[in-house]
Image (tube, rainbow, N blue to C red; front, top):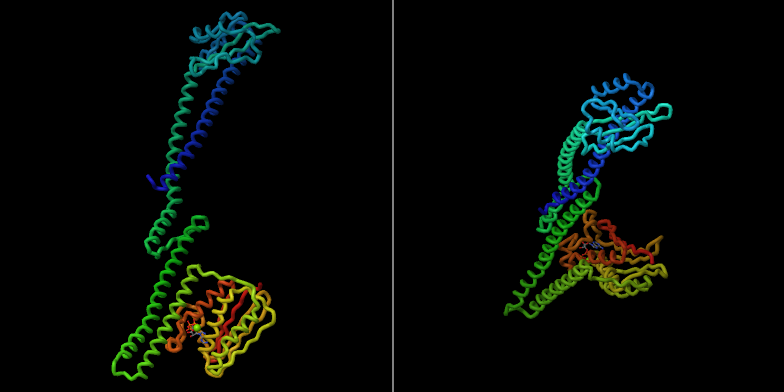
Length: 456
Ligand SMILES: Nc1ncnc2c1ncn2[C@@H]1O[C@H](COP(=O)(O)OP(=O)(O)OP(=O)(O)O)[C@@H](O)[C@H]1O
Ligand SMILES: [Mg+2]
């Protein structure tokens, strides 16, 4: 049997049975001993009583009277003189009594002693009390009790113990069977759930009750299932997006290539088509590059090497690098920076972040508008804001723009070559630096993208 409930139950059972046996045996022994001790005390007290009576009147009629009393009782009496010769006795106790009386030594305390203890093997137990009158020993009162009654009583006790023992073992088995089922049931359900998970079925739903470790485990499996389900869905969507993203430029490339290879085409037209093909190929190259970048980030094989840098110098260089592109579109790029802000950044990666943001500001703004880069140190952080007064982002899209392939206006972005991956990359890199990024925008008025980095 490999079942955990069985193993657990067996283990419990062995332990509980062990404890039960120890308890029962010790209880039985104490009970038997105290009952037998009681019998001895009782017999001795009875002998002492007779002795007391005889010490007062040691005459024939009292002796007879004592003997007669015992002949009616379950106990028996033998009275001897000081030399151990039997004077009086009740019933047919003689053969056994003689044996006891003869083997007796005569120094006995006044309170009497037990002379035959062996209730298991002998036919009788016996006590003796000395009769002392005026400081002289006059004789002895021997008391006897048949051990049949004691043995019967012990037998009954044993019988009861066995009965109760069986009953408690039975109840133990029932309780343990129930308990081990209760304990192992959630485990079994979890095992089944993980088996389902390993087979790719993420629709696992575990009912989690209580707040113990088992409930926590159940909760963890449930969360794992949900995460895996989400990942599976995301991967599916991601693959669908990639194939969609590649299909469109490929259709263009194929279509224009088909036209371009026609023999009777004018040189000028052919060149136009070829440059479209070139542009589309460039877009695809960019897409593949960005995807590769994101894939690296997902695998955590992407590493950033943070180094202290002067933020203003860094942004100034960027500003100078990007300015020609802005001028080309008749736009201005303003740069504001508090002096001497030191940041811990991977300059190459962070340049990618800034270029993506400035590229967006450039792409999604009209000619002649103004874009600014601003950096300042706040309480415990450093804030960099790229703001434009371009087309803005509708409120309902604002939450999504950092998702992969998300574009507000699909057709517009296509013509301007956007893949919808730029901000996703920005987010990954900023978070890898321990910072956060968000966008605030008003549709038609402009957009602010705010990066917050932890202070050095
Ligand atoms: N400054 C901005 N003003 C208006 N809309 C913006 C701005 N920045 C981003 N967006 C919107 O968010 C979308 C996602 O931006 P993201 O940079 O991720 O992709 P993209 O610019 O379309 O493509 P890529 O950056 O990969 O070339 C854009 O398509 C655009 O609709
Ligand atoms: Mg972009």
